[in-house]
Length: 150
Image 1 (cartoon, rainbow, N blue to C red):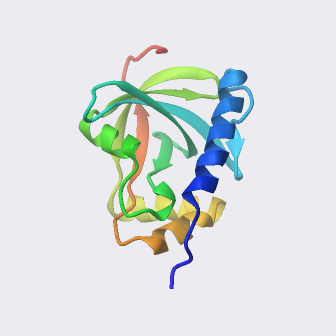
Image 2 (image 1 turned 180 degrees about the vertical axis):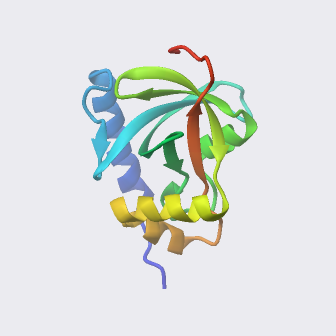
């Protein structure tokens, strides 16, 4: 039987983290649970409004990789749905903004990257065991010729 998890607890932790991030302009809160953190700003897949979220990421040669675990819930996080609908997004990483284009990873690259997430933060393996859905992994590639964005 799968161990239930507390969405309330995670939401409280994320709210505190976001408050620290916002209060310091991203200078504090750039690391969480042993991983680097970035701010992703997507376009809402339904509303068309800008939506922002703080995410753990891994560095790859092509850009930051993010995982849509949604703490093992049976639906993808809103930001993943947003990226599928609108591939372009803005990222603040290490205090600098840049424009990216999302690429969902599959096959051997997916297994390798997901395995790297689990090595750094074993909870991702637990999240995967909680759901039957395919947990997406995206690489956020810098757009060619893109300048810093806001």
